[in-house]
Image: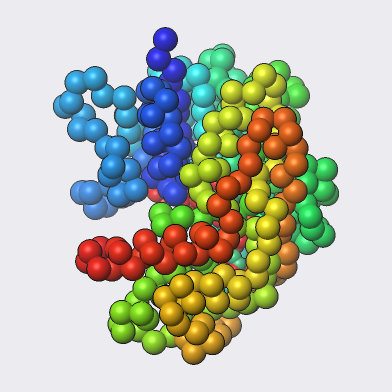
Length: 330
Ligand code: NAP
Ligand code: GDD
């Protein structure tokens, strides 16, 4: 029997890696794609697996939609009757959430409830993955684990915490197979260009090519636990294959500061980061999350997932990809 998955946020970094993983496992994959005013939809991260609607034997289906539209979600869940649902859709940028707090709550918090409610109302027996985040820990001291008390520091963190508890609540109230992966930062060459790792590696490529001289950053002392996004897609899938719906921290456990990542990325191109990184207040946040370091012991012990790529290798992989893309004129 072909297994079927529905992915919200399929056009994002994680959505694209998860799609590739599920297609490689023989799944039929359905994804929700937002409407844009441009003819070409925002599907560039799916280019490698895109299938023309006229092809026969197609296993990837893209549906126009939005997680702010409850009716659409209800119809899709009922019509597709997926075995697995991955809720990855979000306004996922922390800094942007301070400028768009209500919008962020509507998409990131209420979007999850709309989806849970669509599944409950349809009575479809789907397993649900909710993309929770280390940002929910906020000020809590590291290392953060499944038992750490949450203290979010941004509208995004608060919205994700609401979605997280809604997921727990639907599991406890209705016996649904709904589980949250509390993922720490994960990156890749497909990372959005305004997140700090990709902003740095793109700048390294352009500076090494002589196109630019400087990159402007905010807080260099923030500590993050950066992992490699394709491995986190594997963790999401493994969580839905588990016998029980259980929430897990997904992390490497290896911390680095923003300045460490910058140093490693510039050094990989033979450059000294101190010659090229300038400070700009605009990239500071009204409230910062100083230190996120995950404790991935539980997911390792119970479902055998362990991060393989750590932040310094990640910096090199991303610099190489951005330099290659620049050379290719992308
Ligand atoms: P991303 O690249 O920002 O992707 C977000 C996805 O959500 C995109 O496909 C986006 O569509 C879609 N989206 C935004 N608003 C939507 C709406 N109203 N309706 C439907 N779709 C909408 O994020 P990511 O890095 O892949 O992360 C995936 C999920 O994991 C997100 O929920 C994020 O908050 C969470 N998370 C990420 C990390 C991380 O470090 N990457 C860590 C913890 C949790 P467009 O392409 O049209 O913008
Ligand atoms: N974006 C950005 N741009 N961040 C900067 C900059 C800059 O110019 N300069 C310093 N930083 C610092 C931020 O203040 C933060 O402490 C750190 O770099 C990481 O910022 P981001 O890459 O924007 O990621 P994030 O940690 O805020 O959020 C990401 O990870 C979360 C998981 O912890 C996002 O992917 C969230 O969606 C995700 O939930």
